Length: 299
Image 1: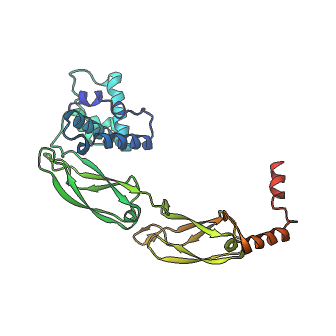
Image 2: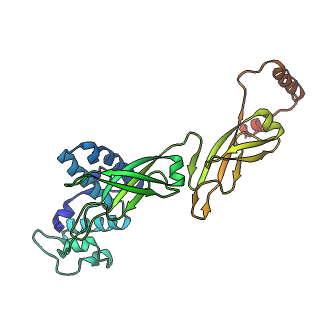
Image 3: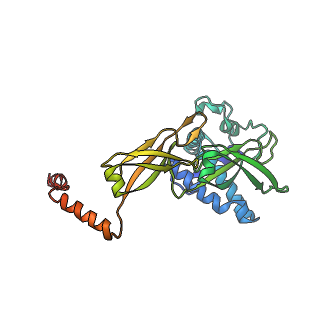
């Protein structure tokens, strides 16, 4: 690729993002385009395959802080007149990039050596539990000019939604060796557990009597067993309790399990239970639970 060809490429326009777009916006836009344009979905449409390659190339530059900065500086320098049609730079172009002898200085000075093959990206969906404990996934890669190939990829324990797992040497072929394969991991939400960093969160339903009188409560863990929590008498709705070391495990480190209490109000009360609640209401009728609340509202 000649320098002129590179600087004329507007990677922001190719992705459809603003030049001031943050990393999260760039990533979200790319993931949406990659799903839409992936070769497995476009089924041999050459125009869409070329578009997919353009989008991947743009994301490779704009998702890397250093490459994006260098690209912006180079494009600005060329557009301001540092480059002239047909002119070659005789010096070391890496001065523009604070001495970095990177791919851009090679492209702009015309001293490009053999290049690695193109990186390839695919995506998978795995369960919440598999993301926490790791999993081997069998993939079938569509060949670019060659027969499809099968590969087994190890998804490491503790991987988060949107993470990329890199498999070296399983991308496109090139003079300087093959590129890499990047596996984008989509984690399917769990019906009970959610994840925030290395901690797991769960909302635990308890009865009114358990919250009021106190109780020993069984709490499920992501490992499949249960732990006991002591609920103090007078526990309020929304109170959180912590179970150390029962969150996301990465090596010797582990997050915690955060348990939020949800006091359940019965939808129907009959018989002795209704009579007991009526007696409770009569016994506590002189207590104004909202007096402080009302005072604060008038402050």
